[in-house]
Length: 69
Image (cartoon, rainbow, N blue to C red; front, side, top):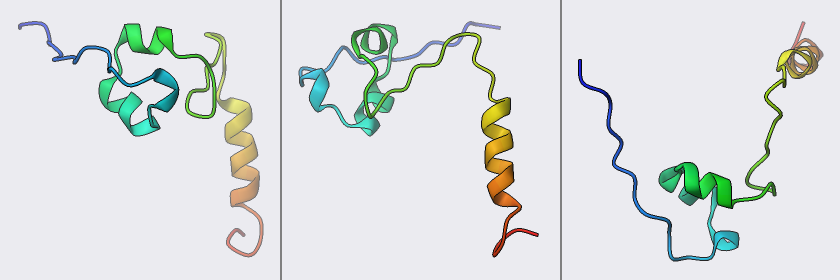
């Protein structure tokens, strides 16, 4: 079975600060993601991040009135 190949486009000519979240998603490759810092579009998590506390928090709100039980 051949390896998957991705047709990545080169880094955009637009300034990184002006890229929208959609443009980042569409053009994402390793060099673009390394060039971007954390801001309102990107939130980096440490490799040891566990989503369990977030799941508990969201579940709490899902089970409250008026839409929850």
